Image 1 (spheres, one colour):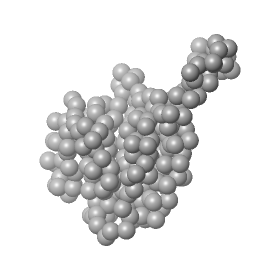
Image 2: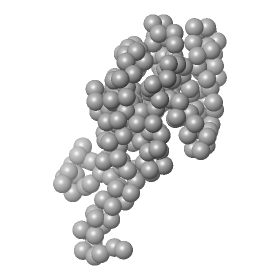
Image 3: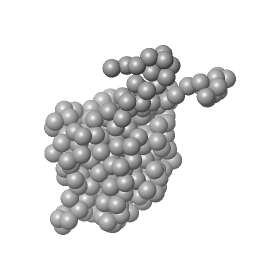
Length: 225
């Protein structure tokens, strides 16, 4: 908008929001001695860059073999994802492809997850993310998020506080951050707690509805029920 010459004081940005109460009862288990579970949720398309994510996971797995990556979603890049795994035996059995899952079916996966990951990029056609709902839902589950400095993601993930952000296509740095959190569950737990607080304050659906209501009332000079 500012590039088009519109006065920033004349527009307000409201995120879509997510029903945080649906996920607020979910708490990651950082007590049991088991593998670190990463979770990625989203369509397997260019702007989600699943191959970069797999490369990052591969880097992590080379230094920490006790890791699992659950990938939820389907799309045009599924064949490329399967081909990549066939060519990388180190992680072939560590990556579980679930295809599309309903939100109800996602809940059990959220419960066993420690860290949420998403390597979003700008597509070759200019296609970008907006304010990814999957990341917001993960934050609602008290999960730290490792993602990219892309589109609206920095509004969801505070780098170094609620997770980590890396540059688009920088799978090397993403792999390092994945390794770091996989080896430091206390840090992951602390970041996840802050992630939940942040998304409740800035991305809760009911809060966003309230902000929209207040905005409309201020513009129309009327009271909305």
